[in-house]
Image 1 (cartoon, rainbow, N blue to C red):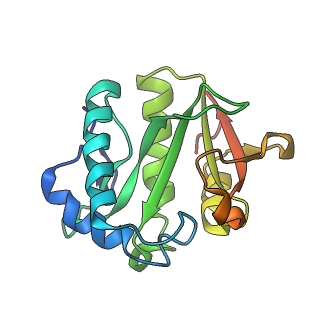
Image 2: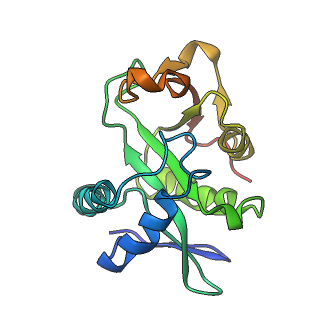
Length: 183
């Protein structure tokens, strides 16, 4: 399993102790605005259990993001296989979710660069994708800072978003080819 470190951050495999801080993160309405709202504890526990299984199989997954200075759990980040069918699959995505107290500090961009290097240099993937609800401006800005590019023709309706959340269905897709986005 994979642990990545940057100057300020550690992204490491899940531990059972991560359930509580992940539940707190997943209970925050602002964090969960583009994910359908706060999640109940049972859902969070199931997500962590599934992530632990997938990180064993894939070597990495969306996993805890720890602030080195304090050891605090501040979010999740990582790369993962896209597990639904879409015109761009099969694919490996990069994603993140961060505590609002740490927004605007360049942390996601910092760890994102480490995951891009890992995905391309260690794993040899040809491409990474990243996607977000069409009006999630913060995530889209990170994708652009990381060197991802957008083609409107790639945008899609997310098949796992329920129809009763139609305002969250439309997603933009950004791509980064191996060898691009360094910096």
